[in-house]
Image (spheres, rainbow, N blue to C red):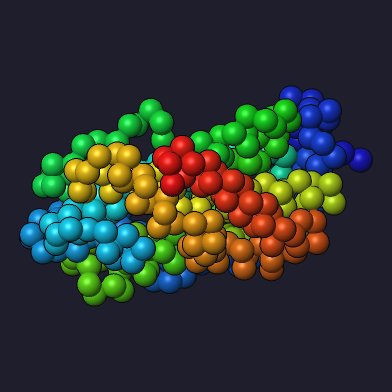
Length: 345
């Protein structure tokens, strides 16, 4: 016999017809273990309210060397300016991810028909505070760095490519529950990879000390967040029926590729701002330096933690990631050929 809370949920929540066969209330008692600040005996960085400021030394490096484009710079100044551009874009992405992906993912937990146990749900809600602070911290450093190098602001209306692709995924989904589930999945994808990326920056002794400092504190927070979002992903996966697993496998795959794929158009923008060369020349350089194989290789480097997580879940039983990757490779090859042809190359 259903409880009163179950009946009220069905009547006034998402409704029977909109949940596509998903069980509206969880019957699973066990929840995967995950890290918390308390279990690691650490404090979230938001409590310190530290905002490292770039020292703005002429020879500081703000981003790992782009080995693909390095030979095209005509001076050390261009090289350092491109590095500053790259870190500015990384920080801008951080702001977008925290405010437009992770925090909405936490909010959407209230709108999917799964009764997440109260303690892990509360811990996930705590991450929203951390992520807002990371966005604030990134904005301060980004503002200082752009001012130092006289870098123009990028178009805030357009947003990064990966967010536009994720929005397209939501836009074509007709089921409201799955639209919210896409938001949650996007949060899981981001949180499975970001701590690894930040840790690499924090350990890179060629980078400015303040870059390493801001990435280190962020990485320590994200290690906690990653553990909690992985646990959420594992728990939800066990709650899905077969039809939903098949659909979520597709969502996970599309989100993973979109989140980690390098944006060659953005490379053009950064290269042009760093060198001051005509845009057509910058396009020719970037589109000749990058091909679909290199883009896929770089994407897989960043996506490796997420792909490993997906395969542990068992998504390969429903959708081959390698097959999806080959489709993406074909799409990139077609797009790059079109761009080179337009530029007369």
